[in-house]
Amino acid sequence: MSAFDPKSLIDLDVCVMNALELFMDPATEFPKPNLHQFKRPLVVGSGNAIATGKIIADSMDAVFADEGSYQGKLHALRGIDGVVLLSASGGKHAPEIARHVKGKNRRILLFTCNPSPLAKDDVDEVHVFPSRPEPYTYNTSTYMGMMMACMIPDPKAEAKKIVDHIRRVVDPTLKNWGKRLGDFDAFYLLVPEEFELIRIMFATKFVELFARRIARDVFTWEQSKHATTVVETPKELFIAFGRENTAFGRDRLNVPLPADCTFPGIMSVGYYVIGKLQAQKPAWFKESIAAFAERASKAFGQKIEPIVKFR
Image (cartoon, rainbow, N blue to C red; front, side, top):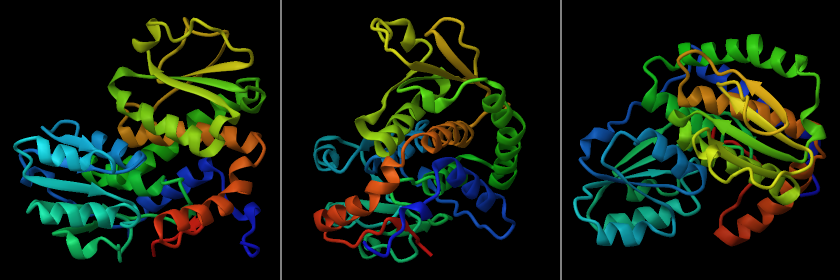
């Protein structure tokens, strides 16, 4: 750990741009897995992996589970004819899940970014998605790459469109707003109803970067009409994505989304804004991630580095 320099870590907004540049690269290749080979798949993942799985398979008659619930669902629910396992590393819980599923005679697809995943021997198909080196837990190029490959007909054009929007619209919006994200200690994110499934990804990212140092909630507009704002919080900022907020909170920031926005689009813009907040706050994550990686290595029995490189 002594050789690790926390200052070498990039903020999340830089990570977003790095990922989009990778996806625009003419040399970048995206796998095209066939989820529809299954009539009713069990989609399994941990943290934002299962959030990604829910987004990708939302239109299917799919069952969703995490590392703690997949066994019960696989046993109790009828009609599950295959498993889609999402794991950027292909390690940690993935080998255990794959072995269990293999024993139940279900065909299993692994979505990963690691060309040599630990779970490879117990799955039927391995689909390796493009990624860039990132600080541990960021999982930006990893899960966004899975969305791009599975949901977007032309990922390179989509990535360019998002980059252009961030540079032409999001950056000027933040610059001309007249206030600093870092001056606020609580955040309420408003997302359009069609992107309700992005809520967990935004909330998880706040937890990973800030833990309990910063309060945060993420709701859709319709959800916000209920009792989500009864108690007002000092120094709270309401950030609305894709729509002007004229109803909620006293301090407001409206962040436009790209035209015909996709899940990679709102993920990019949301993570980018969260990264700008990260840059204006103390370096809590950067100063803590090396020690956390050591603890996680012991917990999983697998070596975990503060910076993840799959290639």
